[in-house]
Length: 75
Image 1 (tube, one colour):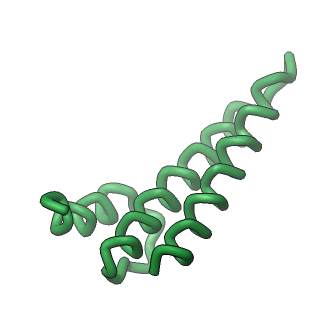
Image 2 (cartoon, helix red, strand yellow):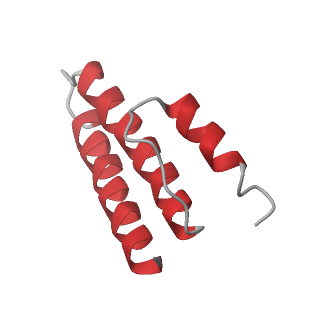
C-alpha cells in the first residue's frame, strides 16, 4: 500500500505545483488556484488513508474524508 499512497502524494504535489505556477501570473485565476489546492488536500488525505491500509469514500468532501482519517489518528 505504500507505493499506492506515494502515488497519491505525487499527484497531490503536482496539484500544488500547478497552483504555484498559476499564482505567478498577474492575472492569476483564483478559482483555478483554489481548485488545485482543494484537489491536493483531498489526495493527501486519501493517500494517508491508503497508507494506513484503509478504504476511503469516493467523495470530494474533505470534511467527510477527514472524519474517515480520524480512525487512524493513533497510528
